Length: 449
Image (tube, rainbow, N blue to C red):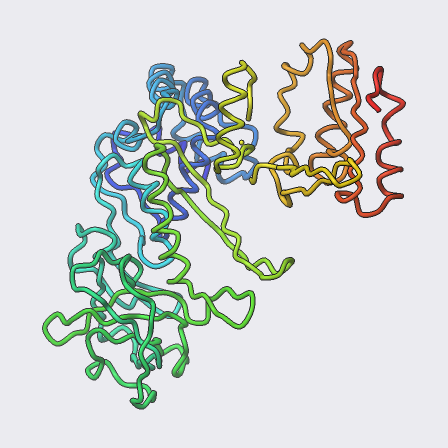
C-alpha cells in the first residue's frame, strides 16, 4: 500500500479515480498516508524509496519512476501538513472524478469519513459481487450510498432465494434507508406463514428479504452465500435489491439476538450526538460483555475531528454526566489542567458512633483506566511535589501508570507525598490492601496517615 500511495502521488496529475473493492480498504490507505506522508515526501524529494520497503519487485518498480523532485515533495508536504484533511483527495489529486468502492451493508459505517476526505466527490458503488461471481450492477452509480440498489445479472450464475421467515417492516415510505434497513425503520417483525422453499429470480417479491443461493459452472450447487437481500423493485423484468446484511451475524448476552442491521441502526442514530461536537464516526466494533449481570453490549468508536471544530477535544477521563461536568468546571476555575468513563464518586455518611461509612461509585471510573502512555511526562518532571495515593494501586492500568509517574517524578528531584487512604471495600481482601499499600511506602518522602 505504501508503494501504491507513492506512485499515486508521483503521478498525481494522471489520477482520475481512487478506489478499492471495499470502503474500509480505501480508508486504510488514507490512514497509511496520514502516518507516512512525511516519509513519502522524503522519498519524492531524494528519489530514494524508503528502507521499510524490502520487496525487490516493489523496489525495482519504484526505481523506474522515482526521480528527485523537490518541488513536488514541497507541494505535497504543504497539503498534508494542513490542520484538517477535509477534502484532501481533491487537493492531492485534482483530476479525480469519483471514489469507486462498495459503500453498502457493513461498509455503510465508513461513508462519513470517506465524505470527509473526498470533499464532495461522489461515492460510487458500481457492482455487487462475491467470490462466487459478479452478481449485480448499480444502474444509478451517482446515487447516494443509502439509495443504492443493484440489478441482478441474470446470466452470471443461477440464482435462488430463500425467503427470510421474519421480514422487515417499513413504517413510512419517506424514510432514509441504510444497509437495507431505514434509519427510522422499526426492526419489529411480522410472522410469515408462506413456504420457505427457495424461489427463482422471477418469483421474488418487492419488499421481501431473502437469503441468496447460487449455482455456478465451477461446481457450486445451491451454495448459501450468506447475504440477506431486500428486493426494492425491477428494471424491466430483472429484480433489483438492496444489501441488508449477513445471515446469522449477531450479538447476544442472554436469550436475545442483535443482528448486524440492529447494531448499525443503533450506531447511526447515536452518532448524531457527535455533530454538535464537531466529530464524525470513522469506525466501530462491538462485543457482548457478560462479565456482569445483567450483561450489556460494549461498542468502541473511532472518531475524527471535522474541519472547523475549533480545537475541541473529546476527553476520555471525565464522565459526561453532571458530576463530571461539575468537577471539570471546578478544576478549570482553579486553573487545574484536567483530562474526562464514569466519574468516580464516594458517598460518605456518619454512623451513630460518629465513624464515617463510604459507598463508592466506580467500576470502571476514569481514574481506573488511566494508561502509562497518557502521562504528561514533561508536566511531571516540572513538579516540585508529586502527590499520590494507594487507591490507584488496586487496578490495572492505573497501577502501572502511577508507578511510572512516581519514577519520573523521583528521578526529576520531586518530593513524593503518599496518602495511604485505606478503603477496604475497594480491595479484594485486607491482606491484598496491606501488601499493596506497603509495596511503595519506602519510596515516599512524606506519608499521610
